[in-house]
Length: 70
Image 1 (tube, rainbow, N blue to C red):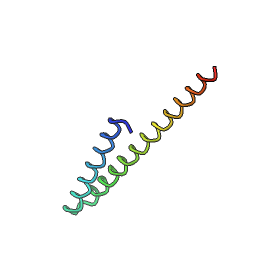
Image 2: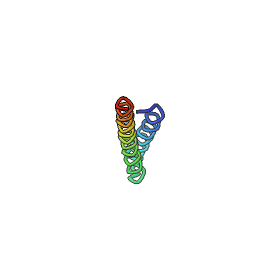
Image 3: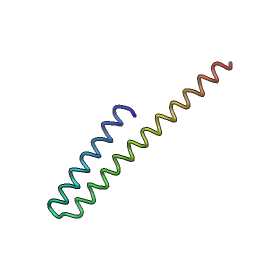
Image 4: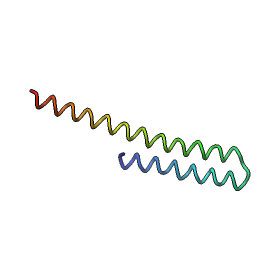
């Protein structure tokens, strides 16, 4: 995962957890749900960034193989 991707993902997870806890403490179910959703968004961003890197690595491997064959 790229550094920017890690930071963005972590930011969403931390912010989401803080909002979720705030909602639980204050009894604000909407804020709690918003926090949970933001935390899930952070996890999804992390998974997408990982998948993107794997695809880029595979493309690079294929390019190297094609260059060797020529």
